[in-house]
Length: 185
Image (cartoon, rainbow, N blue to C red; front, side, top):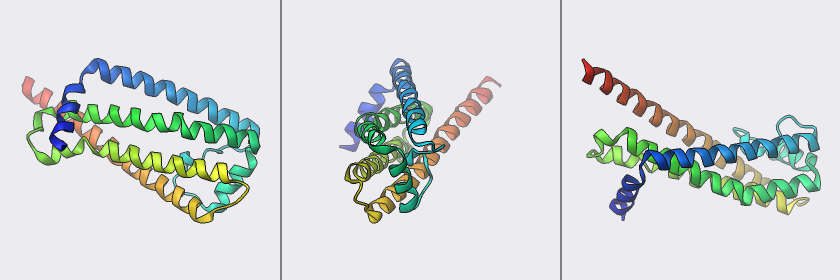
């Protein structure tokens, strides 16, 4: 099964598809910015988006959930269950395809082939966080502190894995650059 998935990623790792997924992800980022600006205007808070935080307390979460109002909670929940489910898929695919392209020279190493799955783990944790935040929003005014802790923990793991993905991509770019320079000498 892993070989089949790896072969699929190898097949999909074309620059035109990477560019297309990049443009789609950028479009989603624009929509997220519009959501954030709307929720900021409705709440008066500078940072009403929970999934943009690196950890938070239940009190912090419910302060934001309360401040954005009923319309804000509906908008936030709707985008958590639509846009913020599609976005992790897009960025996971993008990062995974970039890993395949950047590390193609070392694909014979099993640990290098495993790197292409780290973005998918990051995206899966992001979806768990998004579903948890949507539940917090939809269940309000009932407060579920344990669920808020869980959503926060998922967010911390998401951001940590995201950092690892960026490090893997940066090292791949560096390695490719060094190979290019030394190959030219």
